[in-house]
Length: 169
Image (cartoon, helix red, strand yellow):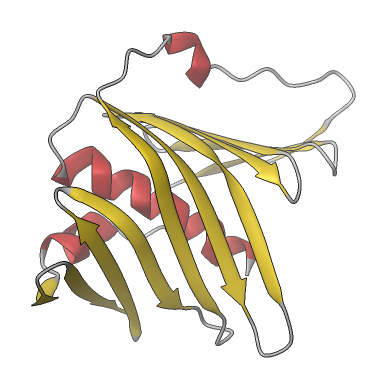
């Protein structure tokens, strides 16, 4: 489930980086993952530019994700580790969302590898993205406090690895 969560967040960054007219974008987010027996709630904030992103999770655990073009650094504070990976093995979902079918005034449906992604729009902004993951969990990401083209200090995209953290490549 962790891989699909990260996969989807990266895909969202790719969607905004290409499809919406902006130079920078900022938003708070809440993600609900509902299984048959439980509900997990994640929340935080992200800031993106055309080729970089910073995702900060505040609940339930502190986590930071830095994306620079096709390179990803995930700082897991509870695990005291930093995970480095590439986006090479992640499909380019922006093409899928570009071809999403409008099913009502503010709702789009995109299909990819047997998964339906539902996007709810409010004017020109994505308000939520919902899908059922490969484990049959219902996942909904809701955005709030969205700001298009905020002034961003480029240092926000620079990560610092604490000395005692393990590095996983």
